[in-house]
Image (tube, rainbow, N blue to C red; front, side, top):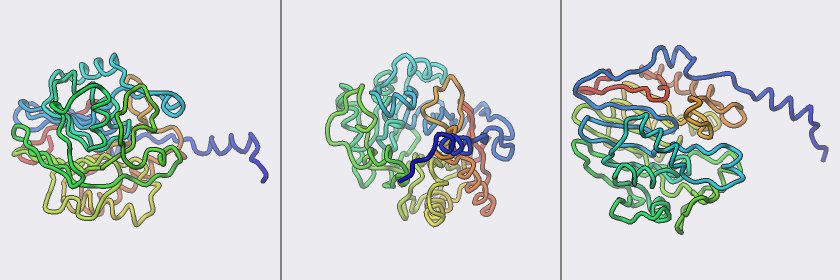
Length: 328
């Protein structure tokens, strides 16, 4: 077999470079989002699928991934929570105490920092049986954990009703993804390989409150009927690798995660490169061969336009307020 030349490999790399940035797309990001003051549910984006939700009394955080070890260290080294970075990012987000930390699945870019965030904020973590081994490996016990069975669960936190519905992960498109399929069956003690963080049970999240209702998908996969009987005002839609899925799978994902919920607004998340430090600002992966973010955003914009839904993205620490279901 003839191997490609260095010049050929260089050409492929250069051709796969991406200059697209969602935050420079006026159709998606016309202006920064800043929540209005007063009563309601405030939603703040903290990168990837880390989302802070508060009504001023009760505070919930989805995933809580801040450390963001670099690509080389993630693939070839050992990773673990960076306590200094976690402390800094919690401070910048104004987070000192949480009522609950909600973990959609157990890949490292969702669950790596969850035990440390739980410890620092005196939260209760809510996650799968696989996440339980991450929690245990960090030296935490079940008093700070709600284990969600594979069939899902529902809990009340203040005025919020949180529902975990069984879902599925986006397809694996790389060997590195295949290594983290399946479940975790023994304690995960960092620093360790990223491949120890299997996704385990995957859940789509539904968070209801008298002032507004959210749905959050932490990966671009869905099960038929995953939100059956529910609706949402806003969907925060995971779009990582969405453009690499077959068109029929993209259609299924949209139907089950958006159309079924009838939201007025869709906010793509999980588009920024999660190996890039938050201090550097949010940006998509540098190469389309890794993930075609432009393609994913085009899919979401087109489908949103067809159904008459507003589609827009959020920058780091952007926020909006839901009051009586209306986004302000």
